[in-house]
Amino acid sequence: MDSTLGPLYIVAGNKKEYDDFVIRKRMLGFFYDFRYVSSVDSIRGLSIIRGFYVGRYQEREDWPQIELAIKVIKSRGG
Image 1 (cartoon, rainbow, N blue to C red):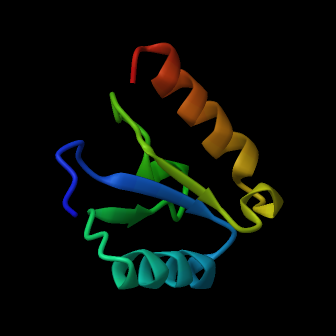
Image 2 (tube, rainbow, N blue to C red; image 1 turned 60 degrees about the vertical axis):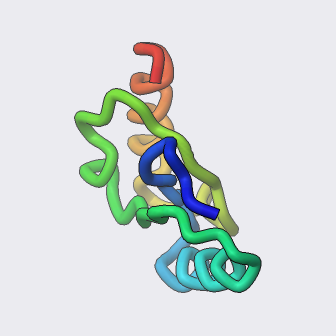
């Protein structure tokens, strides 16, 4: 299954959680353009964002900044 919605941004607790998530999705036949949110800079400037929260994302030191950036994107219609 491919996505016509553009990339799916994955906010995970760490890269391993992201990798595990992508492997599971690929095994189920999902071949979206998954992108790891490694920092708030990964999503800064986006006008639309779609994706998933995975694992212990709320324990990330930069979670408050990522959460705020996502809220700003969503408040602008994205």
